[in-house]
Length: 412
Length: 152
View 1 (cartoon, rainbow over the protein chains, first blue to last red):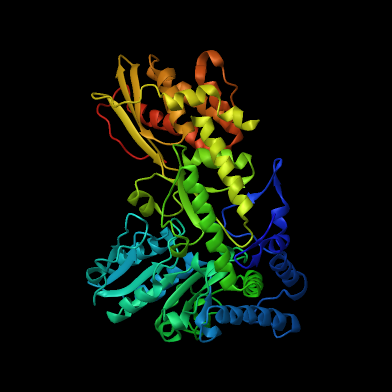
View 2 (tube, each protein chain N blue to C red; view 1 turned 180 degrees about the vertical axis):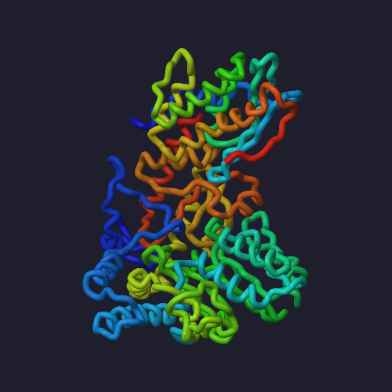
């Protein structure tokens, strides 16, 4: 296997990921489902184990040495994340168990506090269910209205009518930075400007974007950014929400309990300052520490190189898939999209495709990818999806295409 | 190879040439379900007379397992009494749960679906049309009319 791909020494990187040495039956694992969850480098696994083996205690409570060590590592991870996203400081990063919880926190903490009948929340038809359902819930509860930016036939946001959708009635525009179903990269800078021009806040679902693309929240001037650690080489249950400190200040907590309080009386309690106000109970301490190590790993690779690798592999995959006769959804240019590629291969149902490919050790996703609005928009019940990340090679794309032809032969 | 177990000739045959795939206007019973997890959806129509399932048809779209199972179901059930049809459905589900050894005389082509048991996630595809049939026949032998509604 070659390869430097887009500036990444993939052969070297693969050695860092123990699971890639696995076989599935007789075949080497070809893992093409990083959009669902990413694999973990040994260093992340080690940091989590090391935390439990040597530094485990509850954070923010122990006056003893171990407690200090745990707190230092936990808060250290928070500072690492703040740096990674170009945030003003660690206090602007709320730890959560991932993007879904983060968006729910915006909906409950901000939405419940501020939305009134007549107000509008704008999202898009491209969204993952986690950036749809919380808004359905909070607009139903507050009497506000939920509206959608439609999609073009080639899988991008249809912004021709944005002026009528984004108005002074719009209080929040919540949009993905990169679609998990179509791969589309949205024009965030333009969307931020449009939202702020009408006095709306803008929230970004960065679950797919953060692992693949450098993000500077202050340069972008977003009000919220939600991310998932497990999609960016971190442990499951790690992740968080960036919020502009001034906006976070105005929000009510979603979860109440220990740690987020200052004083508790019979009839009321006072809360800690941001971000601790939003971190009730014992947090996913070890996991967030692991996420800090994952971010260090990504920064060592360099996000420019990560993006360049993705662009190159995706371009190659698009070319080979289209050549082989697949129908690919979403933009066909690798500059306008990330590495999540949804497709149909001839007449083979995605479910059948995924089952057959599994026999060759290939892991792809089949289904609606938590994006039923997308599926309905393009008239398909489901799609097959291959998604690439820093440890994938062009050879793996070749294995995928070969298996697709084999699958098709069964059904001819 | 395990894949051969699942994609047996008979399954592929039913998938490529599904039997009884059509509407049944005037059917006394019908029921609809979809499995949004994978995109399989199905409507089963049943014409029942004198407590016998005279005709069963289906419409819908989905993966090879769900569609071939539906096709086989229509052949296996047609002509049986309502009670026997329900028993067959229970037996089929038992086979898919690995609890019942398939009797080829009784199940016919359906035994080909036993291979699906090796792929637990696909079992739901195989039993979908049978669950829908069961739902549709709930009202058989008494209640008139039919109401399409979603099944689990």
